[in-house]
Image (cartoon, rainbow, N blue to C red; front, top):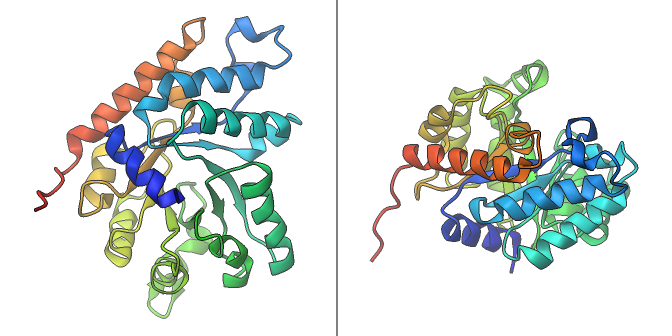
Length: 277
């Protein structure tokens, strides 16, 4: 099953557009992990197992693991998700983008070493820098477009022939790069008007939407401006607000409650799926 097929199944099966970001920060773990030599794995595993039936995907952030020298933990965590929560795809948040020969190694790292189902990439070195990812037709390629950070407009809003650069990226990806139907775009919740503009350009192409929760994005605005024609088409990402919803031994239960609350809030604003003959 391809990444896109797994994502579509998870959207339907779990009635969820929630993507849980896995960004471990051991200083924020409950006290019970203080003497645990495998704390990062155990914490993330417990979050995954508590929320898997409420999400459409998980998104581990590679820098959070690499900074801890925990790349092996990342491998084991993704393997755990595939084994114990089958059908929930994994996006490796790595934002890769480099010249062609290096890009091939980055693609192998994401898909072969870590076993991710999709990976985030940066398009600003041009198509050859992401071609190795695009060629993996069974995998997802999540391409930065209009990101949620405050400085995103420094480059992404630059006027190119009467349109901002991020709109050119959206058009290029949806019209030229998506030959295998495996592309997604990153569009931040913090810029809902631009989210609507991207949706108008790309049709029903899936959009990964960070910026809900700690960054202040508004769920209603995201749904109003970003959902696809079938009421889906979004992967709405939340990390810290879910991971650290609780600070005691009930942290996994608290994470589940926060995920359920976000899923239900999203679903309140979703347009119903059209009836199909």
